[in-house]
Length: 121
Image 1 (cartoon, rainbow, N blue to C red):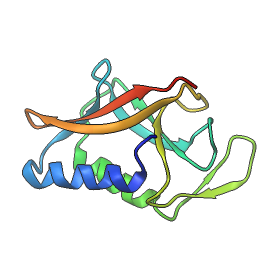
Image 2: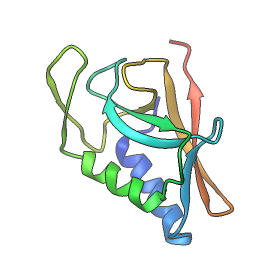
Image 3: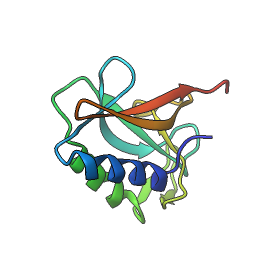
């Protein structure tokens, strides 16, 4: 099972309490989190896209995740889906559904790494 929005928020809060200026990245290719979308694999879940662009401050990313709670996201074939702390959260580019889920986080050298896993789906 993928982490939930609430679980990811809690993980980031713990890491930021130890290192308030931390960056955040994914565990593949050094890419960083970008925008939040309704996940193509299940519209009532969230996907985080990635970028190979500049630094992403974990505190800024945490604010974006918190703002997603109670927010309505539009599904790929329409409809509105309100996200909450129990919403599963995935990693994928906009419009994709590759089954890359978030399974944890780890901290190393002032960088929070979001750990992912490919599902068999």
